[in-house]
Amino acid sequence: MINTDLKAINQRLREFAEARDWEQFHSPKNLAMALSVEVSEIVEHFQWLTEGQSNNLPKDKLAEVETELADTLIYLIRLADKLNIDLLTAAQNKIELNEQKYPIDKAKGSAKKYTEHV
Amino acid sequence: MINTDLKAINQRLREFAEARDWEQFHSPKNLAMALSVEVSEIVEHFQWLTEGQSNNLPKDKLAEVETELADTLIYLIRLADKLNIDLLTAAQNKIELNEQKYPIDKAKGSAKKYTEHV
Amino acid sequence: MINTDLKAINQRLREFAEARDWEQFHSPKNLAMALSVEVSEIVEHFQWLTEGQSNNLPKDKLAEVETELADTLIYLIRLADKLNIDLLTAAQNKIELNEQKYPIDKAKGSAKKYTEHV
Amino acid sequence: MINTDLKAINQRLREFAEARDWEQFHSPKNLAMALSVEVSEIVEHFQWLTEGQSNNLPKDKLAEVETELADTLIYLIRLADKLNIDLLTAAQNKIELNEQKYPIDKAKGSAKKYTEHV
Image (tube, rainbow over all chains, first blue to last red; front, top):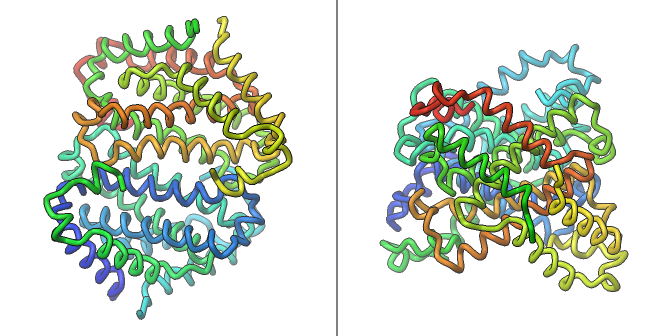
């Protein structure tokens, strides 16, 4: 897999942290915390909305959510970098596993995966 | 930006959900919750470790963390798709803002950004 | 305020950790992480449910959620203890602030607090 | 168990929500999300600190954390109320289980519970 886009961002984030002497703060433990905080800022936008409303965010709200998604991807890329994990390969492997775990003919029309929180 | 890799995964995740009739569960509200749950499974691996230990995970632990990172990216891509957000562009715009907000000469050697949780 | 119940649990949790030499793991940083992980285990039970379904959990699911709520309270009490915070007083002070911040006549029938995520 | 303190807060929170017509937003699903968001605001204060620093918060920071702990307890009490769960009894039952699960003589000096994230 080519994986050019994430690699470029990864490199830019590395240089950003190094130039500012901020690598010292970026232990995997700390980055995992920061990642969870950013995701909660996404959740905060949706917590009192109905599912229907969450599908139809007003423009200004959507712009705010976009920034939180960006922050989430940024910390996710940083954390993967620190752990030497190739994010895209990991995701593709996991999707393959899911495709085997939930064959279409059995899964279709069944919410069991969801009601059982597997 | 070319953005080919994430687009391919995005398309595969769409087809996966559609083929199983699972789109009905994938409201942005629900996907935000699922995303936060996956990230907490990352945090769980690090909660009792020192920062130093978090930099040196044993192989089996690292493999588990890799799977959680994969799940996190998967839900992040799904959520962005539902909101029509281009993840890579959003991340690049945010990095640009950060580069302006924290100029190297002022940020270097200062932990202010971190101690103030800006 | 008498606060007898939480104090008794607090004392029991202290003795539990001390007897096992586990105080060394219970820094506020680590306890905050553990608290967030427990809360995510609550969220996990609700992530794919409609709001209506979340009001009518089957008995076995409810018992699982009860255990997660217990774990959450346990870590919350531990964290407050480590920081020398009186949880009940803090909660009562915050409720008082909320009562002033959202006067009934203005708040009634308005979802503004919620739609604005204040 | 007498449980007077939490009961009083619970009653006050009920009246607060009813008087403002806010019960409509307080489904268990939504309250679980709000709870997780409040806990993340605790985590945010600790994410870049060392464990040692997290034990010695400056006064103003500590006051902010106190408010987040209060919010967390408030949503935890609300959620338990909606699910008809007695928080204190649940916590005491869980502590009893933990005392049996981790006998002192086996647990002492062992970090196994922690390194294995049981």
